[in-house]
Structure formats: C-alpha cells, structure tokens
Amino acid sequence: MIDIFAWQPITNALPDIPRLYTAICEWCACLVYVAVLYRRASTRRTITVCAVSLPTLIAIQYFDGLMPLWFWIIGMLLAVAGMYVMILLAVGTGKREGLYITVRAFVLAELVASLHWQVATFVGLSAHIPASSSLSIIGLVVIYAACFALAYLAESDNFSRTAPTLPPTATAIAAVAITVVTFAMSNLSFISANTPFSGSVGKEIFYIRTLVDFCGFAILYAQQEQTQRLEASTELASINAQLTSQHQEYLQSKENLESLGRLAHDLKHQIAALRAEVDPEHAAQGFEQLERSVQEYSAQRHTGHPVLDVVLTTKERTCADHDITFTAVADGSLLKHMSSMDIASLFGNALDNAIEATSKLSDPQQRLIKLALYAQNQFIVLRVENYFDASLKHNADGSLRTTKRDSLQHGFGVKSIRHIVHNYGGEVTIETDQHWFTLTCLIPKQE
Image 1 (cartoon, rainbow, N blue to C red):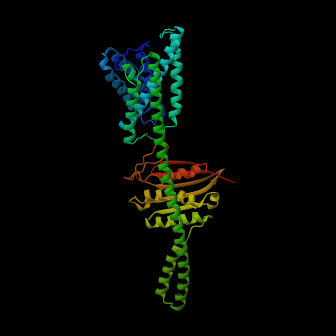
Image 2 (cartoon, rainbow, N blue to C red):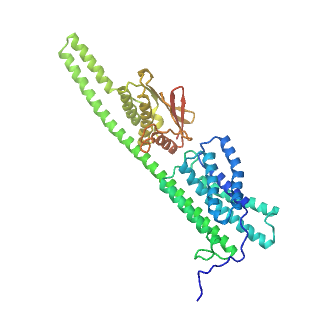
Image 3 (spheres, helix red, strand yellow):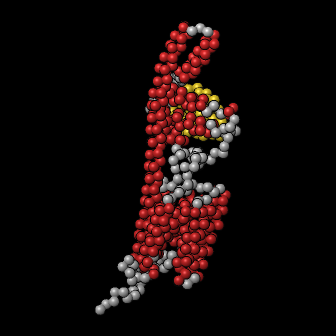
C-alpha cells in the first residue's frame, strides 16, 4: 500500500528570492499607496519617512535571513510592521486605515516579487544568466517599473486624493483575512509539498504563488471598488433626497406666498372701507400701521424668474425672524436654462447655510448676508457672503466639514451645491477672509 502522505521532496527547486529584492518590492508597493492616497502629512515628512523606510525594510529582511526557519512567520510580521509604520507616518493615516492599506500593499509586493522572480529564473536558467548580472538588474528594474506603474494606474481610480479612506470595520477585517489566506496558500508549497494545494516542482511552485497572489490582489481591488461604489451611491441618494426636499419646500413656499398675496389684497380693501367710515386721528394712525404691516407681507422679490422670487422672498422673511440683514441683487433672467428644482436647491442650500452660520452670532449688527447674481463675460456668477465667528474646517477639495454632531446626516449642503453646479459645467469656490465667508458659483452661459 502506498502512503500518499509520505514526505515528498521538491524537485528542480529554484533559488529563493533575494531578500534585497523583497525589501525593495515591499518599499515600492508602499510608495504606490503613498502616491494614490489623500496625504495628511507634509511633503518633507513624507520624503523623509520614505527615505528612511527603504534601509529599514532591507535591514528587517536581512535580519530575518539570519534567524532559524521557525522565525520565518515572525520575520514576515516584522516586515509587515515596517510597511505599516511607513504608510502610517508617510501618509498620516489612522490606525485602521493604515492597516487596511498595508495589507493591500503587502499582497501587491508578494505578487510583483513572485512574478519577477518567476520570469527572472526562467530566463536565467534558459540563457544561463547569473542572477547578479547587469542584465538581471535591468530586468528587475523593467518588471518592477511596469508592474508598479500598472498598480498605480489601477489603484488611483480606487482611492480618493481629496478625502481619507475610512473602510468600515468589517471591510478592514475582511481585507486582513483575504491577505492571510492569500499569503498562506501562495507559500504553502515552501512549507510542505505533500498537500492537495502544494506543488513539488520548482517552476510549478512559483507559478502557484504568482497565480494565488494575483487572485488575492484582484479580490482586494474588487472589494475596494465595491466599497467606493456603495459610498458614492449613498452620497448621491442623500443629495437627491435633499434636492427633492428643497423643491418641495419651494412649492410649499410658493403656495404660502400666493395665499399671503391674496390675503394682503383683501385686507387693503377692508382698510380702505374702514377708513371711509371712521376718521378719528388715532384710528387713522392705527390703520396706517396696519397697512404698513400688510404691505410688509405682500412685498415680494421680483428678479425676473418666478422660482428665484419665491426662494429669495421666503429666505428674506426667515432672515427677518432671526434679525439678519439680508441684501440681494439678482438677475433671475440668467437662470432660464436651469430647472426649477435645481434653482430652488442651489439658492435654498446656499442661503440656508448662510442663515445657520449668521444666526449664531450674538451681535445683531454682525448678522449680515449678501447675495449677488450677475453675468460676467461668459459666466453666470452667484456670490453669497455672510459674516461668521467660528473656526471652519475644510477638506482638500474645499468642501466643508459639518459642525453638527450627526455628521452622517448633515454636511451635504455644499456637496449638493457642487453637484448642481457641476451638472451645468460650472465650478464652486469657497473663501474665508476676516470673518467673511464667501461662496462663489461660476456657471457657463448657455444660448
């Protein structure tokens, strides 16, 4: 009877990957993610950390080489720790984000190192080229450069350079599990050739390792892409919900204004009738006061666009309720090419943000909001200014970080504004200068 579990030696075993090559590969993999991520560290710090990390990773690899075989797993963990520290310090990530990026970089390094060595040993054994020859070094540079350039192009669309990558805890745990399984399966043949998933021939072992590493990298890539799509879908759904809410608010405001207009018209006739019947001096003064009050509610903005008229009139009354001085100069005829929903949402969000910030000021004289809508060259310019007295935090793309505690449900005001303006081919800029907050929207004119 044949013992199928008998130990099987590896035939035609290939030389191990030089530890110098492994360290360089790990360093290059980290550089890829340092380049594609939103960096919160200074340029000087990033360069310094990257420069120090290369000799550190080389030293770790050579130290591992001096240790006995049982130290192999510990040595790999040391290498991963070195990559983690490099990404953590060079990018300025959080701990969970740094771990998530590190495991991705580790799988990429394993893939490129295995692929290069598989090609290098195949060419070297076929052409009898020593691994230390200049031709081999050129091959290493070419393969590393090509592989990491492709990885950079692939991952640059998978990560944002304007916002931190904040993977959910479940996603980070899944990424670590995928990495562990990938590493275990790709290196199983080096531990024992007597398993259903091992190879017993040198070239076969490296082929299995490269293929498994590629599959692991592809899975992690797909995982991040899916996460990005889910985040984008959630954000778009929130923006659309806010757009719908703003439009409904406009429709309700329009109905209320029409009712107030009819009421004011009727009251004017009633006042005129009462004035004809009663003519004491004090009664006349009271009627004049009542008439002024009615006139205040019957006054409406007339900009040349009915939707903008409703929005500005409604927000002006909101400002009056909060003792906010609101001035607006707007040419509504410039907005003929925009939909009613977009106009209501754009101006509604811009003024809501200004009212919220200004209403918090204790000094009524500082509660100022200015709005201007005009044409300049080939652009329509919307400019909303308000006085503020608080520290504002911005993301790299200029978007504001919400000051509300429930950040998941708020902070979409400026995003909604950007979404609308970008749909019309425009741009949004935000400036703060001497306690003045200025939101500017540039929208190309359309004939």
